[in-house]
Length: 133
Image 1 (tube, rainbow, N blue to C red):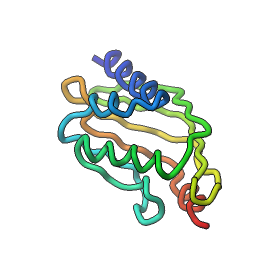
Image 2 (cartoon, rainbow, N blue to C red):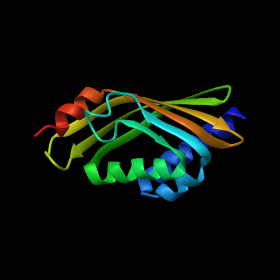
Image 3 (cartoon, rainbow, N blue to C red):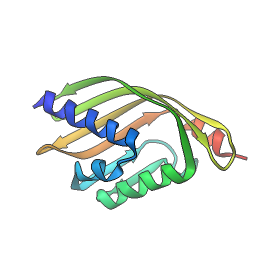
């Protein structure tokens, strides 16, 4: 099951790179819990979203707020029902023109072949700073 889980997550990242958010949403459970840790008041893509519609709202906010300059998932590890992905991204915040990004860790929890939980750990202070005019 671990290899299948890693393959699913890699496929989701590839879909993101192609802008195929509907492919990502189709890989989520109806009760998916999507969270980027940090203070939601610091930047609009920090917070928690529930269900596939919530995840879609998250991706819509990402697309409205920033342009990707780098997106590089690198390492994948499976443990039980979880997949851990390490990588790096860079963004240009549209409102300010400032850069944000850095290293990240994404933790996916899977249930019956779909993602039931997503957690992102990153330098949210960089996003808060880049979002300030």
